[in-house]
Image 1 (tube, helix red, strand yellow):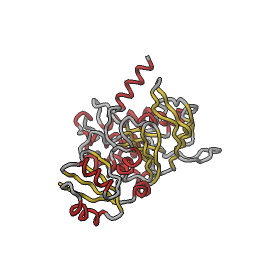
Image 2 (cartoon, rainbow, N blue to C red; image 1 turned 135 degrees about the vertical axis):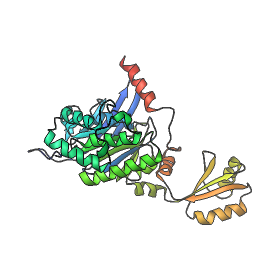
Image 3 (cartoon, helix red, strand yellow; image 1 turned 180 degrees about the vertical axis):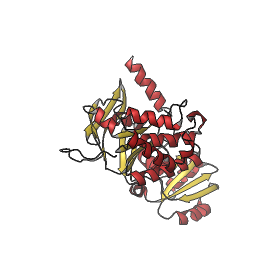
Image 4 (cartoon, rainbow, N blue to C red; image 1 turned 120 degrees about the horizontal axis):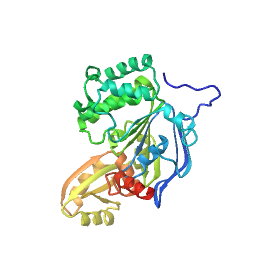
Amino acid sequence: MRHGRQEGQVMTAAIEVRGLVKRYGEVLAVAGIDFSVEHGEFFAFLGPNGAGKTTTISILCTLARPTEGTARVAGYDVVREPQLVRQRIGIIFQDPSLDTQLTAWENLALHARVYGVPSRLWRPRAEELLRLVELWERRHHLVRTFSGGMKRRLELVRGLLHAPDILFLDEPTIGLDPQTRRQIWSHLLTLRRETGVTLFLTTHYLEEAEQCDRVAIIDHGKIIALDAPHALKAQVGKDIVVLSTDDDERAARELRERFGFAPMLVDGTIRIETERGDELIPRLARELTVPIRSASLRRPSLDDVFLALTGRQIRDEEASELDLFRERMRFRR
């Protein structure tokens, strides 16, 4: 039931964004970004809360209008052709949006009615998807009896029920325990493999972005890097040595002056990038005048890429999406 190319419609990228800007009064939420997402791609926005991820998704899903720039989703302009865009996308919001007073099956039936999907199409698809996420036996149970992970799985089924070309996932595992998050991701990857749907993810969980085909690192409304995860990590390239000492500031000064490194003080540790970390640690243990409490060696992660580009780590910051939402509401009054 996936939407195909209509007669006379030129196939383009699944998503095309050019010069996108969104302001709320004096708050610049999205600061002129450009990117595209190919059909069938698993694409991610990675960044801290307040970076502009949710604002961008809101525009792509026609829930907000851009201040400047253009965005096309499934070949349609989000401003001029919003209804055509909505017919071709599915959305999993940060906050649960199921009717907990209805059963799982009733939630799906309501969704099918909203999208005008006839019973002969949605019923067999619902069964297929519910079985895939292991909820078929619970289809007639009230949603209020479901765990958080079960609700998320049901939202995945609902988002795919009308066979969208693109599924938007805005922090889909936020608030879930690690085991449930892993289960959700297992189901997501299976659903993608089975349906061929394009996935657009926003997250600040590094391990989630690692699974994507390409990642756009976004900060303060700007895309600061965009590439495959392995290519982004190659930008850092070197081994990462992390030290904890009796006096980190004095040790960092000595590492700069005696050893010629450019150490960074991060979360109570010293971080060093080096070509041969396995050789450096024994040397520092012998020659550093400040006693070392602990030392570890690892390969670069996406967090290291973000740190190298911004000077800080990805984390929940004071400028949360809730703060931004409140700011929006203030300017709408």
